[in-house]
Image (cartoon, rainbow, N blue to C red; front, side, top):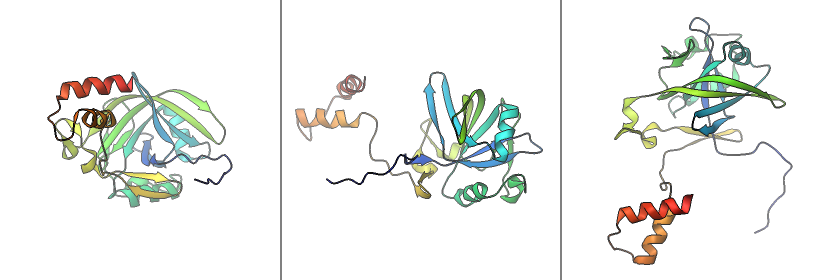
Amino acid sequence: MPKTVLKGASLLAPLPVVMVSAGDCDKANIITVAWTGTICSDPPRVYVSIRHDRYSYDLIKRSGEFVINFTTERLLPACDYCGIRSGRDMDKFAEMKFTKQRCEHLSTVMIAESPVNMECKVFDVLNLGSHDMFLADVLAIHVDESIMTDGKIDYRKARLVNYQHGDYYATGRQLGRFGYAAQRKFIAKYGKGLDVDPTKVKTLTKRRTR
């Protein structure tokens, strides 16, 4: 299939779109971020990349802490607004009518209306060009009980959104589970419609994903 060649760009998609809160309780700010992700699972570590001229940049640089607040479809208008207005000119918590919720380990605050909040403590900062990357340990995660099913986050209930090169998209339709391709091959090999021993499927899945 023919392909068009584009020049190098930060075009990776989809990306999570989140609201990052920083600053103390009296002067907390919210910045919309899509340059964020996981960098390590043990210990749990994440990053956010922020331009030097952003108001929240100095807040995070001074305090060494921030909270990643997940964005739902209902919260998207507020998230977008926080991305086009500066905290130098307004109190975004008051403007968006968000509730400040205290953290367990940090002096900054969470957005109570967000269904998932990640408390993050910065351990390093990398200057990469237009953005600095704040590398942080995840100290705690707060999850609304309304989106929990059997002790796990049910992302179909959460109705989170993602960002793709200037546009927002809905998520939540489950297409499969990690390792399901190996399970499909197992069933195809031993016959459709048969009762498959789940322990054998798990064993095969582990072998295929190492």
